[in-house]
Amino acid sequence: MNGFSSARRNSAQRVSVKSLSLSEEASSFTPTDTITMAQKQPEIETNDKPNEEKEIDLLELLHTVWSARKRILKYALIGAAVGLVVGFSIPKTYITTIKLAPESKSGNNGGGGMAGLAAMAGFNLNAGGGSEGITTEIFPEIVKSTPFLLEFAEIPVTLAPKKTGQAGERMSLFEYVTERQRQAWWKHILSAPGRAIGWVLSSGRDRNEEKALPPVDSVDIFRLPAEYKGFVRALNSMMTVQNDKKTSMLEAQVTMQDPLVSAVVADSLVAKLQKYMTAYRTQKTRHDLEQNIRQNAEARARYYEVEDRLAEAIDQNRNISSESLRVRIERLRNERTLAYNVWNQTASQVEMTKIKLQEEMPIATVVEPAIIPDHPAAPKKMLILVAFTFLGGLWVVGSIVIRSLLTEDDKTSSEESPVAQELETK
Image (cartoon, rainbow, N blue to C red):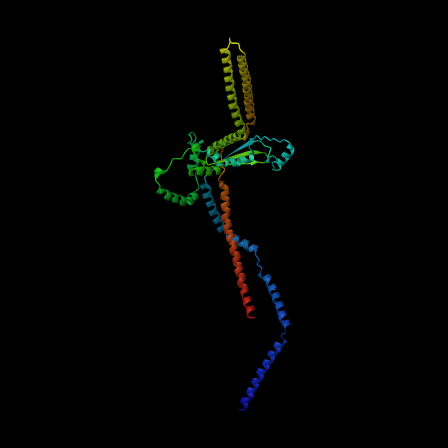
């Protein structure tokens, strides 16, 4: 019994000693120690940051890429094959270029030296005003207008013969643009759903209700048929006119899939532009000329009428002598003189208006005429081949580099995970 009580006292003493030591440690742990630990934690984090930065070994990366050279060559050859398919699938196009130097009349010739210097810098000092008629800046917009493009619909064109010695096929430009244009095979695939939907929608329509396409001369532009809209849209992308601000020259380009058609349309484009320039610049003068010709005809008829009346009065009263008759004849002679003066004046105005019309007639000098192109301008088969070959090899190199970087990140994260676990246990 005494032994049991003594053991109990010893255990109680050990517990009291442990509690005393814990209390002493707690009392010795001050708030300054807490601040010190808080300050040390960012130091540890900042010391770990350089270890988190990724380092790329370029020699190892180049070695990885070089080890996959057969794969790179394989995909480069695949890209070259795709480039050949794409290059030979795109239809050939021919470009005909014509350069024009239109005549420009300016009402203000002052400051010609400054205008020349500004033109060399790419500025046109005469663009604001002082120029008579149409300016070269508006020609690109004229070529894209619907009425101007519709005038090309009935132009006869001749296709280049497939063999030497054979005659080319003749047709209208409308038929050539809407029915004879070749497209790449992928465009046929992309447009197949739309054609299928159109065929389904038009299957229930009565064939007798379909009206014949009206001629261009009688077509209503306000209600332009869909066929002419498609022709205008296609021709708009085939013809361009650019204005060189430095030289004030016009450069017209026509892109067609047939070289002969390209040259014919380019020549017609220049002729229609000259006709449009003439009609626009001489519009007021031609109106004045019509008015003067009509007034001259009226004045001539008036003069002939008065002259006939005077001759009749003289013949009927040749042997009669009276004061009233003399006054009447004198009045008729005065009217004849006045009518003759008016007739003479209107005739002079007609001649002067004709001279003015001739002076205002614009002249566009063709610097570079239309020439049938010998070589197609597109597609650039060699450029397409090189581009697809480069893309095929670049695809493999890019995938190898990205995969190596991702693998290095996984290795780095796996090496850092045991250290993180150890820190968490501590």
